[in-house]
Length: 339
Ligand SMILES: [Zn+2]
Ligand SMILES: [Zn+2]
Image 1 (cartoon, rainbow, N blue to C red):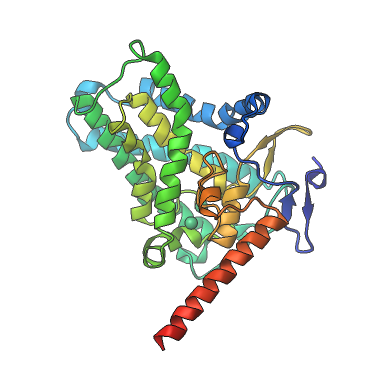
Image 2 (spheres, protein in one colour; image 1 turned 90 degrees about the vertical axis):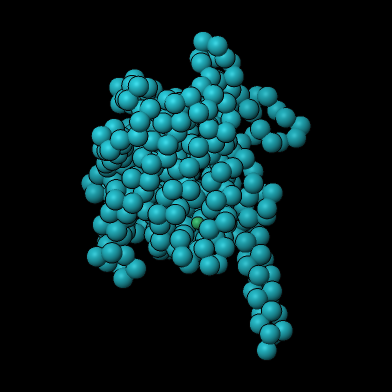
């Protein structure tokens, strides 16, 4: 595909999409039904449908019996870890192999023209972004994802929380499934905003931000505190009446869905003239500029509300620069007052 029909490439070779990142049209006033209906298929397909499919596969083929889950044991916890790790190895591995190792798409639709594998850096273990990100994902974050999973399955199995049945409340549960990506967005926004606070950033979140030019393995490359808080989004289903399948869906939006923001490409070419939208640009800008786009791609407009939204345009740049300028002035004024 010709990516210059969809965006522009600068002198360095970095590509950026034309137009602005459009948030979900749910928040436009007055509401426009045709726009919402046009947006809905992209909301469900392919990513959220994939997360639901994996949740169902897990529930029917991977998750042990309720009887087994009444007692926490290493056996089924390690089994879940092994499956989670294998699933991420395959799922993220497909993107890594096709777009970063084989470079099937070269730099078409790629925001940053460089590939992390070509740029050794001292901030990473073994000076390699790939090895560092990979080890942190498999030996820190995926174990913590599994801890969250074991906690909620054990609570459901023991009846510590309500277990809403599909045959009793199908409409309620279907609505909860539709809202789950929004729960993710709100949870992620607030924990993410929190760990951008100076001391917490240096202690926790700087690990994730070492990857300024993210690639698939960067998605789950986190400090343990972040790895747990991020996946703990599924624990909301112990607070709101829910069902373990919906909780698994919520967990998979986090675990599997983390790759979206870190793909590095705007579109993933499938055939000569078809491509899948990655939804990666908003979070790519977060990795590039740090203090913009704390949420996802604008499903819930929290960044707009808090003035931290960057829509990928020049106006977005100008708003961000004005905000950074104000912040510098505040810091300088404070420093002067302390002298
Ligand atoms: Zn990220
Ligand atoms: Zn961040």
